Length: 406
Image 1: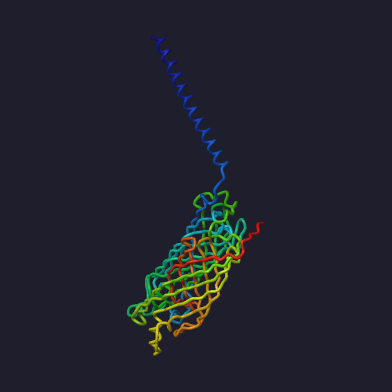
Image 2: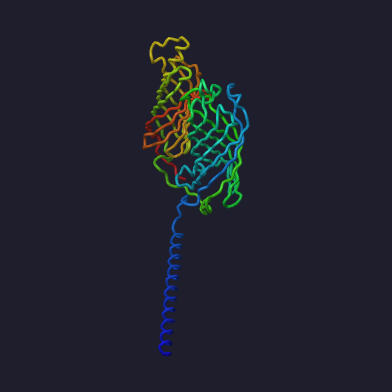
């Protein structure tokens, strides 16, 4: 019996040793496989900007409502505002990112009580942003942040219930943000920022009155990475050219575009009107970022007839309502997207009560090789005339094909 127990004990001990050895083999194999996999990953080229480049920002602002019309003087006050921003660092995945100093791309949520006036209420805005470094080094930078999106105001003009609010005639508006920022690293994860800027609300005269709101604020904030920043963040790349990018060829681009806008002028004339516009621009590419050129446009504003009739001016035919304008143009290009600025004067048209000079700001995005969508804001020295939406077509004429390689 004792011999059997000893034999069984020896067998059980051997079985345990065998299990331990088997587990050690599994652990060692797993460690070896893991090391080999890590070595393989490290040996592969790392794609910049793929991980560890998201940041969250919280900004506290304090400022005032700028009174650019006498009717807005009653709303002058100082008040706080708050902004939450989610941003992504760029690494040169596209060439325009490298050319613009690797900007931060983000989306912002902005809120303010606007001083607590019941006539204008409070404001909230949601807009995408691009944060361009102007001057920068490893630890600090001076940036310019641009945002454009949708805004909502809790109160708007009503000739019976809210006749003091001449600023805005609608709940939904275009929200724009322009900020200069100073950013400095506090640690690997944290960035302190401060700045000054302007937040603007306007509906582009889609519903009058539309004086707009201009809010000037100073801000302080903290930005934090969600996880350890990408170690390759400072090792940016400049990729090959793509079809929408400047390759050094000399060419002229001729663009034909249209836009249609809607103007609700119930408060003044008890009716709504449409605006139809057509534009032609001849542009020359002078650098990777810039184009300059000349433009010609035609604008037919349905409200012009009503304005003339209120002044007892007779309109013989609709062609008299069409305004022809000539202008100079500048375009800032960012891959498929660009911003076009035109400044010019009208040559004809019966109604030029807004002035002889005009400015037009166009946000363009190429949806195909030669076809682009555009959002157009036409103004007269800062006063919005209309905001329109349309399509355009571009033709290129290359006059110099020789490219110099450095």
